Length: 464
Image (tube, one colour):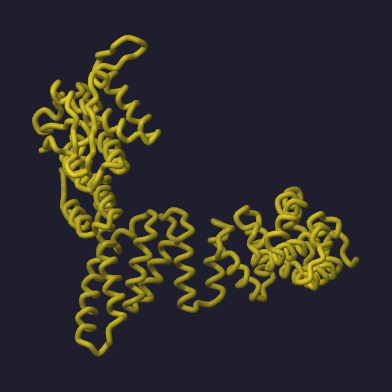
C-alpha cells in the first residue's frame, strides 16, 4: 500500500492508498502548506487551482479527459525543458488518470506514470535513492503486468548508484515472480533479469579472480578462493549461457561468459559461443560479434586466413573501424592477388570517413600501398578505386586550406598526404604544390623524396 510519504508526496504530489481509492484530492489545507523533505531542505509548493481546472482559451475546462490530457502535455513539455520541479507538480493532477472511466486508459496509465515518474526522480536535484526505491516499490503493485519491467529498471538504477547487493536482491525477487500464464513478453523480461543477475555474479567472480592472482598457488587460501570462483562460475554460466542462445545483441553477457570459459580452459566452448554469435543468421548483424571472435582467434594464434575471413565481414559492416588497418596488414602479407587488391580497397575505404582524415598511419599505409601496387603493374586497381573518388576527394582531403592546416599541425602527416595527392592528382595538385614548396630543415629530405616518388609513380603522368 502506498503511504503518504511516498516519492511524489515529497515533491508536493499526494498519492494515497492505491488499494482503495488509488488517488485522493489533497485538502485545501494541504494545498496551502509547503511540503518539506526531512534532511534535505527541499521545499516544494502544492499546485492549486491550476491543476484542477485547465484554462483553455480563457474558458475553464472541467472535463476529466481534457484535464488529464493537458497535464500529460505539461509534463512532457517540462521534461523536454528539464523543468523537473514543474513536472513533479503536474504529476499530482495526472495521477487521476488511474480513475478514468476508459478501461484502456486505466490499463495503460501505470506504465506511463512509471516512465514519467522515474524520469523525474532520476533527474530531480533533490531526489535520492530512498525516494526512488519507495516509488518503484509502490508502482510494482499497480498494474501487475509492469512488475518485471519496473523491477529490471529499478535494479539498473541501483547498479548505477553502486548498490550491487540491493540490485541483486531486487533481481532475485523478480526472478521468482509469476502472474498467470507466462507470456512471451514475460519470458523475455525474466531472461533479462536472470542475465543481469548473472552479470552481478560475474562481477563477484572477476573480483575473486583478481584476488586469486595475488595468492600463492600453494596456499590453502588459493584453493579455497579457486573453489569459490568455480561455484560463481557455475551459477553465472547457467544464467548467461541460457540467455545468449536467444537471438539478440548480448555483447556484455557474451564477453563475460567467454572470459569465464577461457579462464577454465574451455577453448572449444568459447569458440563455439563466439562463432554462433557472429554467424548464426537468427542473430542481428552485429560488428562487435566479429570483433570478439577475431580477438579470440588472435589470442589462439589462428591461421592468417581465418583472421582475414573474420575481418572481411567486419569490413563490410564498418569499413572505418580501427581494426581495418590491422586487416590491411594481414592482407598485404598474403601472396594472393585478391588479398592485395582488397588491401588497397580497405585503405581507401578507411579514408572515406571524416573521422579518419588525420590518421597518419592510414596515410602512410596508403602511400606505401600505392607505390607497391604500381610497381606490381596494377595501375588498373588504383584507377578503379580513384575513379569513384576523384570528384570529391580533392576537396575533401587535398584542398589548399587543408595543405596549410595540415602543415601547421603535423608536418609528417602533411608529407604523407602530399605524396598520395601527387600520385593520384599529379604535380599540379594544390595540396602537393603547397607542401613541396615548403623549406623546412627537418622535413627537407622527406619533401625531396616525395617529389621523386611522385615523378616516378603519378598516375596522371606516369613515367615523367
